[in-house]
Image 1 (spheres, rainbow, N blue to C red):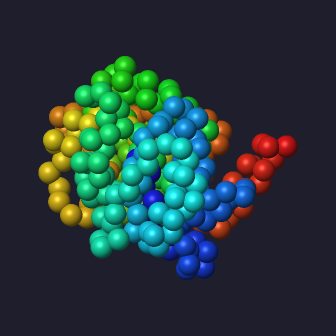
Image 2: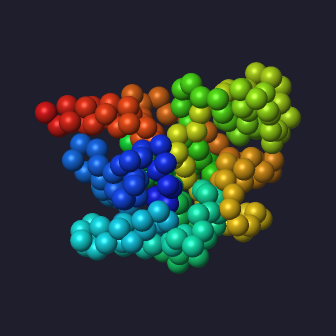
Length: 245
């Protein structure tokens, strides 16, 4: 699933007439980069949620014949549901597309460009039989996920406000890592999500981590961009263009 429903407020005025998913970097819209990366690892079925200028995403996909894969739309144009609500709304579509009962579902934000091995993330998820596997990185942020030595999610903290949320008893020596916007879930998770309406998937993970295996995949690859700001767009464009030369 590609999360593409965001407003892209930090990229205005680029998003005054288009969704963030169709903002271009290195000659291609972010959505195209994302779809092509998924195809490169063998993904043939994709759900995309839409909200801001949603019809433009639908038109773009039609113009490109859905990039020759099975792409379906989860329509949030009536109400933007955040990551957790968006995933729950798309659950019936996602479940209908599974070819195996416990086939992993890869989720990625449309504005993430990364060199992480998605195949390795999925392999770890399956090997450890996780309910969810969260790709995390060492980077500076105000909000961190907390993991124990077994890479199990045990909590969350905001270092600016000193707020802490505890999923399992904290010892004080937990690994503080930043979420990367890439995760893999078991389809069984939909039976466990109790929240309704608009909510964050991180809130769900913190709740489920009390009883379920919600594990970190520690990404140390060199390339990772969350393209929510102009400076990041420029940096990513330079790197992507240079990599083609």
